[in-house]
Amino acid sequence: MTPTAESAPKGTARSTARAQRRNLRERRRDLVAEMMLAGATRAAMCARIEAELGTTCSNGTISDDVRAVRRRWRERSMDTYDEHVAEQLAIIDAVIRGHIDAATEGHVRSAEVVLGALDRRERVLGLDLVARTRAEIDARVVTVEEAKVELVAQALEAMCVETGIDRGVVLPIFAAKLRALEAG
Picture (cartoon, rainbow, N blue to C red):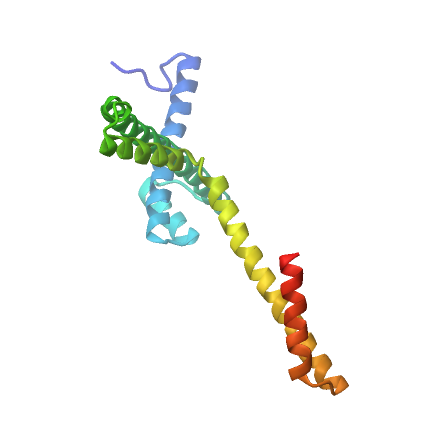
């Protein structure tokens, strides 16, 4: 015979009530998660919770549940990501172990496989970020430098127009000075 809330000792009744509230909260959050994926509004979430669980619902409750569901999803995605990285590293390590002896003995294809696996390992661990970031910065610097050259050319053109100086005379001199500065 299972004890009821009235016949059970006080501590047991309290822990039973706490377990029921926890169970209700988890069922409500499962419904909220399902409705979030379906794009339901908070009002629709409240209406469904009240209908299915027979409990009152407020915007604050839904907000708390949405936050909890998102936190749960974020934790699961991090676990999944960490598992994926670990699997990828295990595969890479197996490839390296399988080819390292032949590579050190001079087998060219095995050496290429090991080098490729090491490169992949760098990318999986994010160690290639410095090189990628440096390349992006270099590309932006070139773009900025090109923009500066264009501005100087426009200023020179405007100066020629305003002063009445012949462009045909100024531009070759300017180009020669630029080449001298670049070589310098």
